[in-house]
Length: 475
Image (tube, rainbow, N blue to C red; front, top):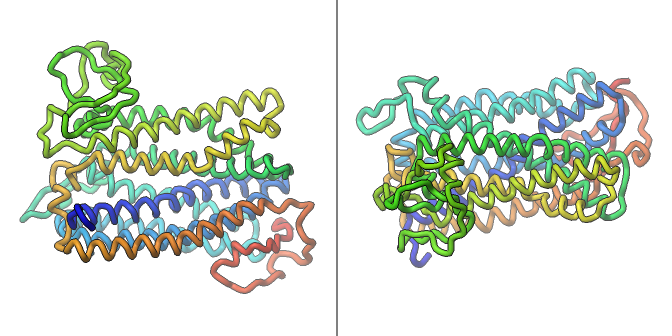
């Protein structure tokens, strides 16, 4: 590709595969916990609406889980193919952490996923609920190990460098590195919010088309409670994460703020909008609020935050990108809080399910959580540059020795295959969403008790369009 080096293409390829992959685990994490809550509420209250929603969303979970596994395998191979120097340098840390994920999270999910998806008629309700909870816990354990590995690359500790390679000397310090707790909480809550708005948008879509039943209403109600309660918590976690970034990655923070120069002294303004120009070393067309940057990040009315000119040019992240990716993430977060507050007001007025302007906004916000996650990952990963392991190894030293032609061909193949394969999968998943949950009134009658109804063990039989729904598993 003209104008691009092999390093640029390797970075683009990894960013492309990560961006495709991350949307599936995010929904998997949220849906797994949502399914555990739904089944727990059904067992507690015996209300059919929770069972109906469980079976509806378990189909979508099955398809999404499969696409997440497939897309994740590709990323693991890229460490060896495109980033072999990084694997040589830091593999003694990242390799075991990813192995721990397989030995704990993946085995746990694999052990109970079959029971969760295919065991409704074959095991008792208590065991089935236990399987669902184990799958949900597995997704969170997976998040733990993946974030531990990535956070170590952001804020490395607990290591020594021997013969040009990283050697772990304190695994507790490696895992619980300074940025890990904040990034783990931020990502897990982001997954819950992304799923909540996905579920809420699905309900809004049906309500806007006149399909109103208890299951649809329950979907919207539960998702809006999640938005109301969790979106403000996410904002507070994000603020704490920002303070952690200021302490350990000040150049990233300066790039996010688009702040260049402290020569004039005094407090730092908060730049709401503008265009950071890396060549001219200034943020053009900026709209700013005096002092607010120092107040938010330093809790001071006089102390400035670090400026990009405090760092050598070679150590500065691309402020143009991270300035805007951060604002996309933060802006969507503010909209989520607004939607949650609006839903509370409508709930109080008794119009939550009829207010069409609110439902239209909720529908538009359906992909907002996933977009915010992508924007957040662009911020944290591009903001780490030019380092692949912050302060230890530059990205330019981590790439494999491939030609521009080789990287161009592989990138093109990835684009074609990903859009073809996952486009079909996402299209099928959205078709399931458009069908909506089958309620007790709409289910076809079915006879027999647990263990009597048999279906072929096809990989996607848990996500068939035809809802051969359950006899009551309590029977």
